[in-house]
Length: 133
Image (cartoon, rainbow, N blue to C red; front, side, top):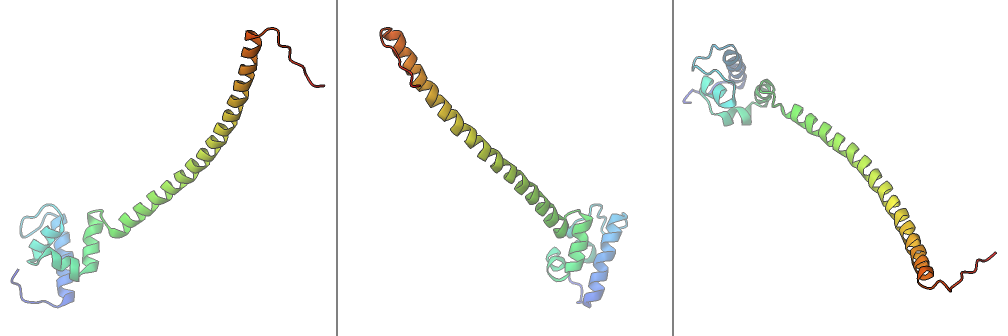
């Protein structure tokens, strides 16, 4: 990590070459698994240098690791869209269920009143109900 400063383009090229070398199993340091740390060790720099000063190279490594920020963002957006669709259908279902509950409550109240009338008739058979015509 005591390498003299290299021009930006040369260092970036070294990063891309190190990625390729690690993927093909031709690493100088014996790295076999691609990671930011492995690439940094391969070219003798810190992983932070790659993250902070070489965004194209960092994105390239993320893509190789299937952790691209764009891919992750798009995946999260797709998941959010799906969740919103489900949310809309759930809200509609809740609305329908609330209407059913209101209808059932009304029906239950009417049956309760009818039940009271029938109990009154059974308890007092002398009461006659008059129907309006």
